[in-house]
Amino acid sequence: MEQTKHLLLIISISSLLLSFSAEAICVPKNTTRQAHSPARLPSIRSPPHVSSPPRRPVASHSTPFDPAIKAICEKTDYPFLCMSSLAPFLASSNNPAALLEMAIKASVNYTEAALAKAMRLSSDPSTSSITKAYIADCQENYSDAIDNFNIAANAISSGDIGLMNSMLSGAISDFQTCDDGFAEMNELDSPFKEIDTNLSHMASNCLAIAALLP
Image (tube, rainbow, N blue to C red; front, top):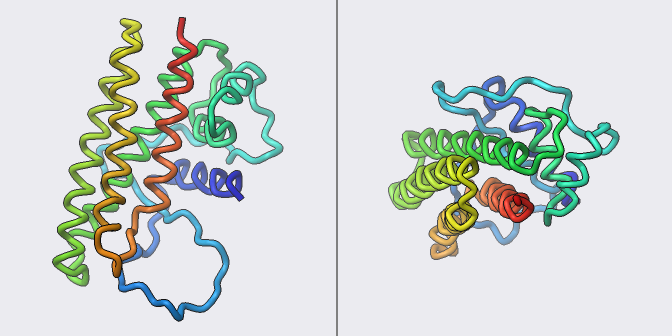
């Protein structure tokens, strides 16, 4: 199941500028909701200034990942997510620094797409005022996370592991804070829950790769 969600993530990342689906608006929880199939990762689109990664074949369990990249990703907590999120940028490399740069770039792209989703929901007239308040907090969290990722990426060349760890951990905290806001209102479902979970896992993978730097 976890690997299936990760596969859905790379489909979403690969189509950031090409797909646009109806957005889920926060609604009161319905305890009588009928059983349904597992929720798919919401499709989200990057803002106009965001360049999507090069289009590549969608990663699957049969995708022949480069052995060197696979060996590094297997040292992370979410190896399939690591490999699938790198697929749009895939290039043969056994250099942890190069892979970390790609992993951070993938995380930035997906965070920017999440921010764009938040902006659309916030401007939707059907979104309640209380929901807009929490969405505004998430927008700030996503902006902070992007800054943290960029600072971490800039620290790669200088080999400042401490700064990288601090910024990547900060990004994880940003995603969790977004969800915590909605959790305070028990009757609201967060439209970013799955997105934030995947982003937290992507940042965690970045931390694991950073630990491999010499």
